Image 1 (cartoon, rainbow, N blue to C red):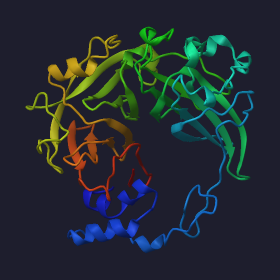
Image 2 (image 1 turned 180 degrees about the horizontal axis):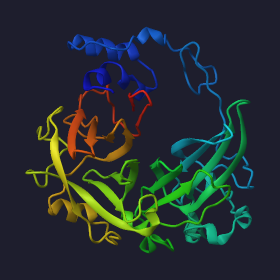
Image 3 (image 1 turned 135 degrees about the vertical axis):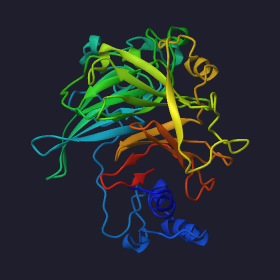
Length: 389
């Protein structure tokens, strides 16, 4: 499993897509740390003439989806692809469920076409918010959601591409579940006062087995707030959640029936034991030091629908810890890792580690050095135990 030392000396280079790997390692070695990864195993980056992705020798990429392409359902690939996950199928093919972080002003990147001419191809009951204010005070469906790719890895070809969730807003990140579904998160709390016909700020679940648009069921009990990412503990079914706010909280959702999130459950916020209302951001002073585990407990959140978007404010007043823009989150090797994008004195970001089996929280990495961590966003843990940022 990645240690703080190996993270800084080897793994953190992926924050810039392999750029400057030797620079990171040299900086770490100069600080007295030893690298466990030989950067020479990758080699220098070559220059991609297409100016899409520079890679070392022996690596290649293949473009499988472009915004604006026509999909198999007659809709267009929406813009702003963001968080996503890949799922294996029994026939050896791969399913990718992809977020689209679309606001309602991005009609030029709409899956229904700029003029809405493809909207008639969609069952209206499958659109979560069918009427929201678009540019020029026109009305139309919210433009976010997810699309799903079925990819044949043997012949390197997209077999199908279709819209799998429609009518949501700013689907930013989320997370996979152990049962082969993708939880997609709305990073927005707009509602009727903003010209929408439905409230936003919810999670939605999209099975990787879906072959068309799913029923858009908001997971209301998981809370209405500025969601970012989730991570599911496969042993308990508890879902951990980040909130992308400068003063956000860390949540967990205990489902009434594990694996059936729409049936309700309890939403709770993280509290550091004996340090109520702890500000973990370390902006003005170092309130939390790296490598020192802290015991945590959890408080129930009652007003989960929060029409005034005050969950984090009320939770902090009751003792919940405050975090600096919680973003990416992933379960790996028994722990949950999550990024706080602008934590630390330099506001360059923090990586946290939470052990759900012992309720121990640790500030894993806070280098305050933009060449190591520069406003970390999404992250995941590899099958061999490295944290990729």
